[in-house]
Image (cartoon, rainbow, N blue to C red; front, top):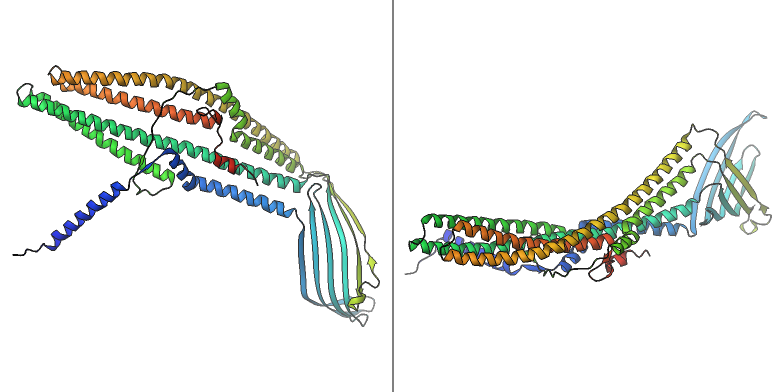
Length: 500
């Protein structure tokens, strides 16, 4: 007899099978990520890094545009057709006269800015054809005309705007490059902190699993004793309570680990559905730190100090630019050329006319109600503020490096103490577990020794992680790697600090 499976039951079987296959695939797809791999992923995918990189490239294009503007410019303006018809009143003859003019022309210009003087040299040629009729003189003229002249314009008694704009763009690019490099350093700090946070929670989960197994063993021991009449039922109740508490702690640590993984994946810019685990082996090797060297290198190499210097230079440029408001200044314009016109194109320069021109203008402010003075004072105060920022940053760098140095010395002692405490706690737990087997200890007492062992294990793990993070912090603050005794400028930063 052949039996058929109901449709709903078959559907449930297929769903369960699919869930099992998915769970199997998902567990196999878990990927172990090392700290070095996490940093590479973050540098490539982080939104903050991408924005900082775009800002650097944008400022680079601004500088390229400014450099291109210093080269000769070629332009050609053309007027294919110009027509006008006007009437004018002649007072002498008391008549209205009509004039009509048709014209086509083109102007070719070569302009060259002069960087060192803020002047501009230009060569201009204007060629055209004109057909003019005037009723007043009853005459008509149709012919060609051409004007060729060389001109130089030079501002006087004011700042060099061309040179200042170029310097500002160079400083903006340098500042954006420094900001990109600082962002990479900050990202390295964030990735390290998040990485070791996951490692810490993995350790907490592992310790919870060990504690859970120990509670399971102690529960089995007391259950056999109660069954044999060697212990009261109250001991079993306490052991079951300890077992449940350990199970709850284990579940909480699993949840905290998964939450930390999600935050870590978001920081790296990878899919939240990827199953990851961090892989590392914290090797504890005490590092000798030279405090004076750390401070000296930090004060000479920190990128933030370079940024403050750029801010100070920009403030000085603002003062120069502000001082030009309502100031006495002048301009010299020199030009020389020849003009010609003729009804025949070949004879346009048959009788050329020279056209030299010299012009000098001055701008003389008389009274501005104190506007210029007030603006200059505001710019001077801005410079003072930038100076204070720079000096304060130097003090902050020194203070932070000193704090880190003291923390490192303290952490070394804490690690040694934590190692000894863990060793003692493990021995104490083994001894009391044997006492518990022999009936000389209650479940409550054994629970206390179990908690003590878990606490000491976590204390050691936390001390090692804190030591690693403080070493990284010192490396970022001083830009010196004391673990390898070398300057800390990663290859990525070296490439980005090069201004092309």
